Figure (cartoon, rainbow, N blue to C red):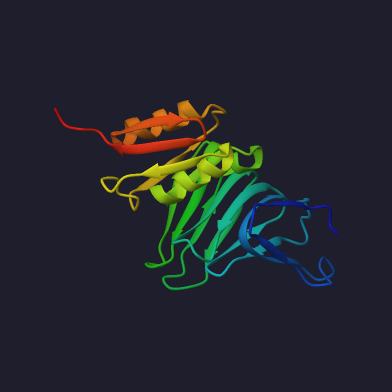
Length: 201
């Protein structure tokens, strides 16, 4: 109602009360969303997640807060925000453009990290983006994107994690990057990719 726009990623929810904007501008996010907050010097905009709260007056930022992930992230594109941890040790950090907050759920600690926001906002352009995801999940996402079946042999550790993004539209380029990273061999036959560990010479 205040002119703020929010774009939600898959499996995400945004909740706010019917009287939003009358006394305050407060919303609850589960999942991932990109916020373009309308400026209002008298009423700050607050995004509540289960672990951190983000306070702003007018800005653009991305929030990553899925229940089944070990981290919560907030990446700032424009403006200035304050991030408050709502659990011990209750850190408070000021964030400026091209910086992001990474909150570790297990330890309750927050870090301030420099970023170009490419990884954090790539989901809005339908690129493949992964944050410490198991290789099994990475391959499943790639298979869905390109409509392929991917088979791995027992030598591949599907629990290895991968962080990165792909903007390539060619499946061969994507698999080639992963094969260099993990050191495996692959074959593409029609609609199926076969992956196995490279033999040592």
